[in-house]
Length: 452
Image 1 (cartoon, rainbow, N blue to C red):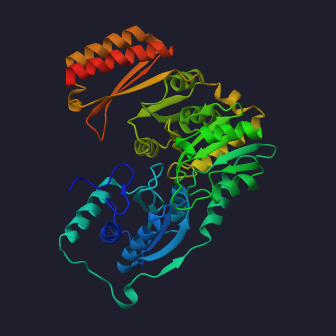
Image 2 (image 1 turned 180 degrees about the horizontal axis):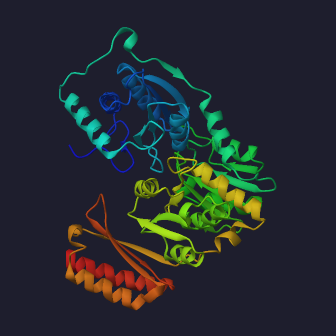
Image 3 (image 1 turned 90 degrees about the horizontal axis):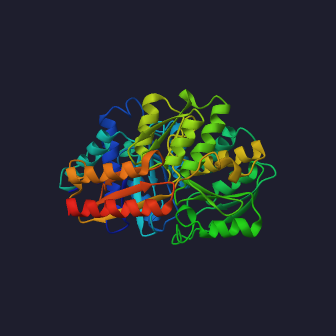
């Protein structure tokens, strides 16, 4: 069996790859592994379980709850809430474990399981590996140790979770949003209830789209992966800005008052300057991945803010932040982590803070993001090649060197093997889009020739 846990939990097509039996088994395994690690020592453990609105989340939630309770864990069912809300409540309620059922921005047929440790932090890789090993052993016949009588877990709904999360979000805001008209696209997802409520309580005039989840329409032509509806709504309503979340609301993209898209790099640039003004940007440092736009790097250098770059993936950004105590990090895709107030990317929090900066400065979002010039970026996937040789091939290295010489200081080249497919991703940035396309095309041909 290949490794079940990816960079963001276990995901797959619900009821095909990710079955009720797997959800139950992984939950029981998680309870046993954490008990062996001493997490539950001296008390009866408690878990917080939440989900996004996908139809499959209903039976998967039932399976997870059954598995945990059968292993002696008391369960607080918080219902449909964003991933960062479940992480927050895991910490705020002193729970020993958090479980979120979501496939984030994926299409509706998919679903996933993500475990949080005490405090709302991602489980360590070694614990995930141990959970997978224990699950696999019992799947092949090794019996569980099962509590009986008063030892089984109790299950109750925790309806206060939504209100607690909203209160947390509002407590973080440096100023109110009075006078702003904001369009929110909730992707028919997990934030459809809490996000509009939080923005409205903060003082904004809220126009909401994509906030009628029916279990089947999550991410369907809306949300952060489909910004067309949001752009149109911002223009139609004469809004100051628009905010888009994905299905589990751990990411945020935006649209300015003219309908132009604002990506994660631009959001990070605005928040970095705002946090530095409040002396909240520790070490005057922001963390991003190697896929961040070169314009973001140049802007941070110009503003005297240090940029630390990691491998692609918000987990690597978070690891770097936690190791060195940095306060702000994120990805171009809109995962933004504000570590003083969240243990994971939080799209609602990010959107609130972005809007708060607009309200505080009296400047438009378009003016605020002008701090960085987003350079044209071209990404080409080169399939059916030996991606393991991309860093050792002399021919590829020569092609990269030639491209970098042509681009000079105003461009950048990045070759990255895919983590899941037999292909190499070629990314080129340049001051001119046509030059970026031409260089990317030549590099892709060189990669295909050398590694095909």
